[in-house]
Length: 159
Image (cartoon, rainbow, N blue to C red; front, side, top):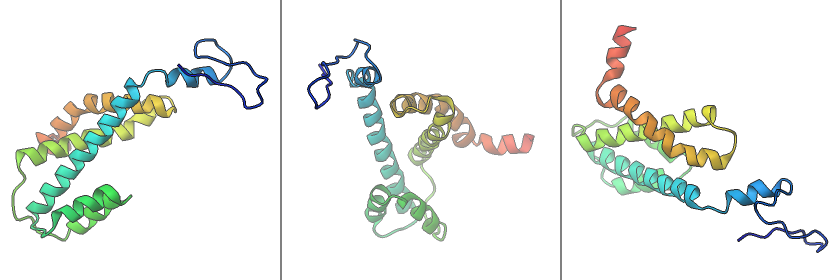
């Protein structure tokens, strides 16, 4: 499927599986696209979840144009930080719904996967892209117990 060669024409073609040097593992990683596709789908789903949460949260705070904040969060590199800083001055007009709390719980699990991932996986971006969804799913019950079920307050009271 993939053929690797040097432009000088003297080096023979190296195919994945032939075991010739550093290029072989790199070529083997690209022969299957399923892990990278799964990572990309998870990234798009995370962006969609973040957009949903931003829109619903802006509506709950009475913002006139919540779509502009969604665009800022998704398009500007530090848009979520800007949104979180600015929203501290807003009064909440509506209570959190179960859907918003579920989205917040999932986003906390995903954030936890981004923090824990580099600590438990090799420093290989392909491995981390594959491990990111699995780690987020593994951290989802912990995020559920600590955030959605208010376990953080019970844990702080116990300590």
